[in-house]
Image 1: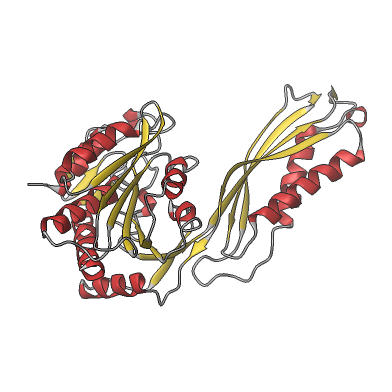
Image 2 (image 1 turned 30 degrees about the horizontal axis):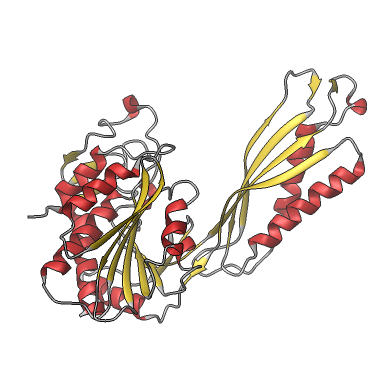
Length: 378
């Protein structure tokens, strides 16, 4: 008999941390527990890396209920800094420790348990149940892109992403635009800055100019405002040397309706303007990562059904916004459908040392997904 908590511990024990990912190891565990009524497809990305899509066919192809979760985790850093070894799950007083316990192997275990229970009912659903286990969500989202372009999600009627929300009901998420400025100037002695071109100062000025040029959209009721942060500057060879080279990175988070492309064009214009000041400048900008902001209609059927299920358990059904991005940003932009982001664990635990989640939260999420599937597909 399938045990969701024991399965979560197996998932934690299986290293799928970035940058390598090695999600194939997790995919094999998942394939090993899914009943044969699921049609399982493996989308291979590179050696050891894949995305898994499992379909329980329905009477019709349209209206599929999709549950999605990512198999990769961030790196765990120095194991000695952890309360318990990051790949050796330990349960204490109902709390499970280990890398990925919250982000988001807890959600993967819960959605898998709910799907197995649903299949065990022995009733053919009206529409398919589709499980999507993605690779590379913690980097560029290669798995979500591949799944949404594979044709395997054809007929998707709704999407639940099982990211940690402490069982809060996420209805929207900010977009992301990560940029890297590279600047080449002219080296000179620190005492003669006038004969050089200071690449470090230029990189800083480009970042601050772009930050000031960010669209001043009205605050979103759940997501606040557009933000831009300088997250890294690399430059300099000595304190008495005007640097000729610099690199600066920015993390820009955007609201629904904000055009990430327009921000990128503004960054390019700033580079061109700097280059026009002196033929020796060479300023450029490149995109590291780009995710659109997404939101779903609060009156949509999936949100209403999930809201009722939460209220029945004494939990709030009030929608919340997520300041981080999920696989939803790369799925619903290609296959439009109402979505919700709801899962076990606190998102504050994501990427933390001694990451942990509560057993009760994982089991509650499984129950919510199971009841949602019954109300949607039967």
